[in-house]
Length: 78
Image (cartoon, rainbow, N blue to C red; front, side, top):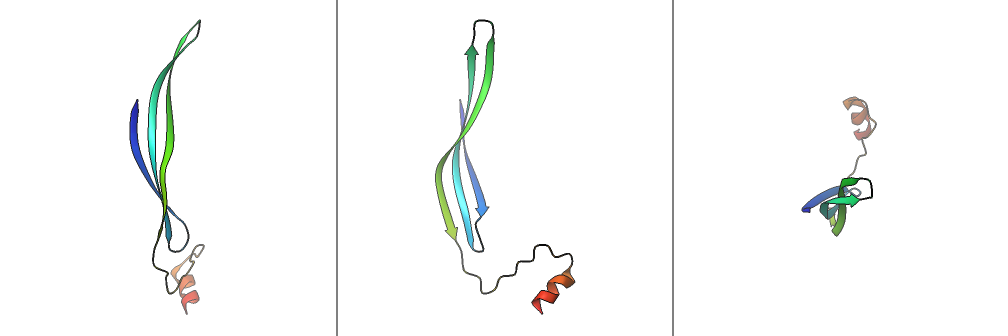
């Protein structure tokens, strides 16, 4: 059996980040049947803690996704 701690950060809006900590457990098991012996590795993640980190609220916010060039962004700013 092996264990490992995993950490994950995910954006949750303009000024928030979701932080999750998992315990990853890997276990190798043998399955016995009358005609064969099967070895299988099973991996599972258990959520240990979850926290939302709140940052400063920005004075301005621009959603620039989908713009093709810098000139497109400048048109929005002007």
